Length: 159
Image (cartoon, rainbow, N blue to C red; front, side, top):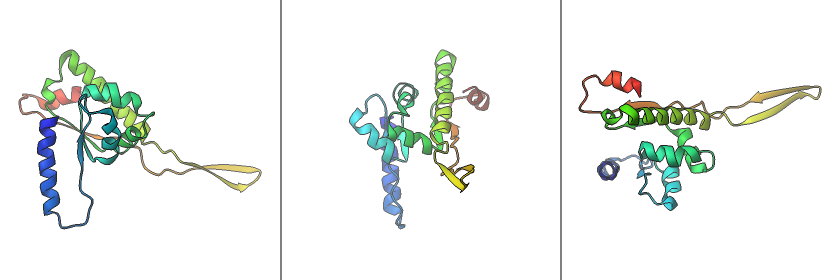
């Protein structure tokens, strides 16, 4: 992911230099096996674009989403997942990645589910519970990329 990160950082820097608006700049980061644990929370909390891999999702992010507020926040606001080089995900490895992506989708839905409940009393004898949702459940959009496939749609649907 480091080669993609360096190119993406240059692109974001260029966009920021040419942006005359006062919007906050987009930040990118990498969470993978080489990322120090001391930096992962900040990346998960502060970056709008995060580069990772199926192994890191499976071993670090998904098992800790409900223990680490930064990961819960990340997964609750996840909108788009881009799967690069998707042609390599076939056979046993492809089946593993497919299960990780299904788990990611489920965890995103749970992490973004309505969490605020308020109890409203209209009468002491009548207790009425009103659910107030701060946001709708998040179901991310999946985009798969590959330059070397004959039947990409069929392959991606299997993921």
